[in-house]
Image (cartoon, rainbow, N blue to C red; front, side, top):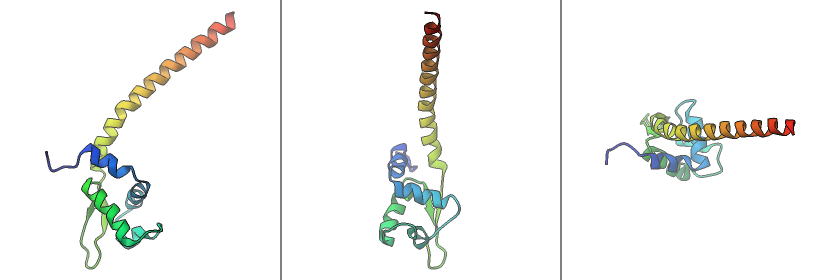
Length: 113
């Protein structure tokens, strides 16, 4: 296995709403554990556990800046997840187009009867 995180790790990390909220916050810039813990009713160690999951999935990196270890978003691993989901978007889009065509046919048939 290569050293890069897999699709399963990315989806697992993204499955938690707290971790998604953390990623959203990090999209606007780096933040410390204290800064990330502010909007949540949870301890700093609990936030740190979420950060470890995100780090293992490759979705964040942690730096060292004197006393704090700021977290930074790394969106690259999401690219593979988006590509995988895109295939299903194409499927659903095609399915909905077929349904629209069928409904249009039924609507036109009903008008003439």
